[in-house]
Each structure stands twice: as structure tokens, then as C-alpha cells.
Amino acid sequence: MTILDTIQEAVITAKRCILENLEQAKAKSGSVNPYGDKTLVLDLKAEDEIISILQSSDVNFAILTEERGYIQSEKKPEYLALVDPIDGSANLARGIPLVTIGISIVPYKDIMTSDDAELSIIESVFTDECYIAISGKGVTRNRKSVHVANPVPMEEAIVSYDTKKTRDATFIQNSTKTISSLQDTRRTASNLLDLCWTASGFLDGMVDLRGMLPIIHLSGTHMVNEAGGFVLDSEGNRFHTKLNPDVMMSFVAASNEHLARKILNRFNGTE
Image (tube, rainbow, N blue to C red):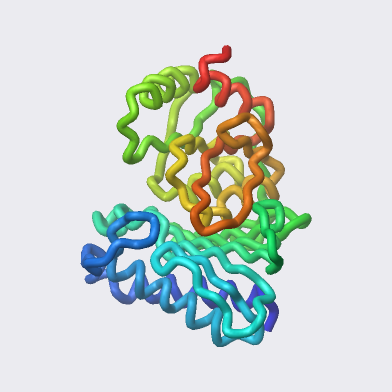
């Protein structure tokens, strides 16, 4: 079994777990994950399924998960797996069918960065979409190659924009100014799905400048990069970060560098 086969099995098993236990969609576990979010019962169940598949494979994985944090391999790790078992937990609890499962795989070494992502899979639980990014080989959606959208002016762009849990007045003011410069926005409340839709050309970009998104969402930015898009960090540099458990992502992902910079500059008030 290849690593791709193993990761696909993990995602499919987690998806089956969610679909077979929808009666527990609103059930809370009573615990809080390492990132300060309340954990649903299904978050833990789906994550357990993924961990079980990874740990029973022939490959030694260190695992960084949203609910349980860092899990070291008993032997020397060959890969680091970054796991988001349910992206869109609030959607799941409310019966909104926009929920994803995301896993990224990185060859293990002392210092790992976002550039080292080798394989990412994002499965949309209810919309029957499976996205796979392989480093240097592009992105597929349900086994068909996809690419980012053709460039458009900022005023014609349709972009996902995340403002969840933000109360800072300056951030809200800058976000309002930025959003008003776009044609329109769309947001599924599953950032991984919005990043997949950017990678496949349905959206022109996805913006999350809150500094609140855990690094376990790396699979989403990996999709955009491999599909020919461009990802900037909040400082205006190409998105590049160490894969430490406490790293929070802040980025503008877009179909091209020009649009990404236009969006970030508008947010910062530099144009």
C-alpha cells in the first residue's frame, strides 16, 4: 500500500464515521482542543479513525492533530501528518452540508516547513469532492486535473473572506474596505473547502488574515500552490512557515500573485 493509499483510506474511514453518526452532530465532548476550541464528539471520533489508520500502516508517522495536538511515533518518524478531522464543525452541528476532512504529509526532519508538503488530501463530506495535491504534479478533483481561475481585476474577483471571532475594530474596518473593493464574497465556513474551490477556479481567492488558523490547515494552501495559485503571508512575503504545533496561519491565497498583492495592499491601506 502506498502512502497515498493510506491517506485515502484514512480520509474515507473518517468520512464514513461522520456519516454513520450524524445523530451525534451536535454532541459536545466537554473538552477543549489545544487551540482553545470546544470539541465535538464527532471531531474526536473522526480523528481517532484517522490516527488508527496512520498508526497501523507500514509507515511511521508523527501526527499533529487539531483535537489531540502532537502525537510522536514510537519509532523514528518517516513523515509528519497534519490532520484536521472536521473543518466546518459548526456547519456540521447546524446541519449545513459544507464540511471537510484534510490531511497533509511532510517528510520528517528536524526542521520542516510549509514548502515541504509532499501530499495533501481534502475530502468534502457531503458534496462528493475529493481533492489531491501532489508536490510538483498539480491538483486533481475527483481524479480530474484542476487549475486556478484565469486572472481578473480585483473589482471582478469573487473571494472567500474569513472574519470569524474577530472583534478588533481596525481589522474590521480594513476588512470592510477590502471586501467592498471586490465583486463579491463567498464563504462556506470550511476554509479547506474554500481553498479547494480557489485551487479549482471556482473562487478567485481565499483570505484569512486573522492569525487564528492552526497550521493543521496546511493542506488548503498546498492545494492552491500546486494548482498554480499564489499565497502571501500577512507581511507580503510568499507564504512560508515552520511546521510547529503553535504556528497560526495568516494569508491571502489567490489565483495569481498580482491579485493576492492587490487584496493585501487594500487591507493594509497602501493603495
